[in-house]
Image (tube, rainbow, N blue to C red; front, side, top):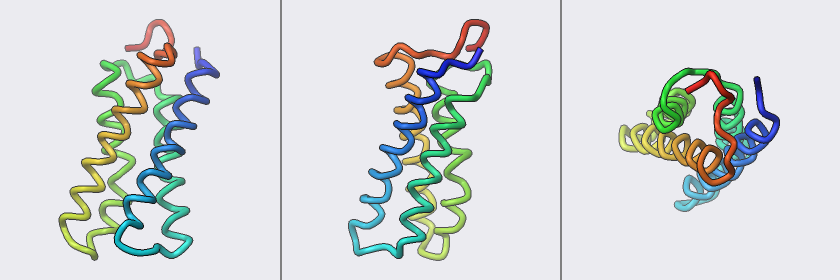
Length: 117
């Protein structure tokens, strides 16, 4: 059964990490508004997907893999700026996904419902 606490927590944490990601991306100069919105929305959707997922694997691996999967579109679109941007996008996506799961599952005590991983 889907937990409202878990879904809201993961979505808000995704939004928070989206803002962090946007600020990191803008550290070398301002971004156009639609790129900033895309970065924030992609991390928010990642958080939402983590919240609704019923993937029966260990929570830490769940966060890592979901972070990687939801970072791939942004990573590939950033390839024009260089391969290092691609890899940083994927690596930080995995970190954000793991942190969303860690904070939701262990700190906020909103793990996946019984019968899930």
